Length: 167
Length: 204
Image (cartoon, rainbow over all chains, first blue to last red; front, side, top):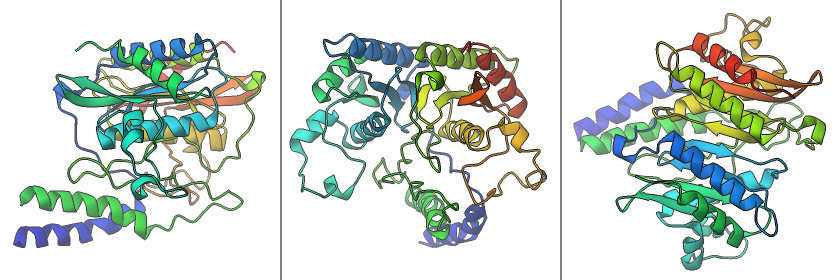
């Protein structure tokens, strides 16, 4: 208990210094076995973008691969990508990381109230397009796709990107 | 217990400044600075960082007409060249690199193995500074009133501005069309070199 109290006091001392500094605290490092290699992330992102552009209804979808810290390992947006696609892309990646499942799968079980954010978290989203990147049965990141033609296309492209990972 | 205490400590450090700083909105800027959600989700005691949307903030969105477009192929080539240049340095810098358009939307971004979220945020702020100040981030550091400020100071009331070199403007026909931001663990000098290697790939 004294330890806890000491930690609380320490944090009270440190906080004023941080109030001046806009530097974000360092998040926990990701262990080596859960890191996503950049070359694979880039290959996946490129495959997803190309798949989306080659659809019957070409979709200028933004694509990212994030690790467990929500750090984009690779991100690519084709010419003509819309600004709101970026927002949805971020929300889908966040949903995968938080819920440990595809964003479309989460959409099927999410309890939604019209006009209210899901579970009070405005970053959660029920649309497909985000998929977990698995390694030996454990999630190590997410691939997230958002384009103007809808979530079914997004999921198709995300799967094309996912196929590029080999661990 | 130890773990719990450190989680609390981390939580206090992360949350309290956000509350302590009411973040005065810059004059004339739309109140769109805050990201839509800083969800309290995440793993263990770690609060998942808010998704980074690029340097978007106090800018009014502009239509990206063809004369302001950065082609994806060139954006990717530049990002890759900057990453490769940084990795080829004697001190092998794993630098986060991003190419953003005028709206702060990320056109291409790469983080090589070993990059941290902190570096990502610095790269983002460098690109943001270029877009807002319309000059390289290193040049912003030499401006009157800015030079000599401690690097932790909030400049001009905007916590996204940064004085570190590594952000360069992307020009097309004499006008700004975007920014390249590089941030690696080995320092500003290396960042500038890598950013220049990336800029060389643009032929707009």
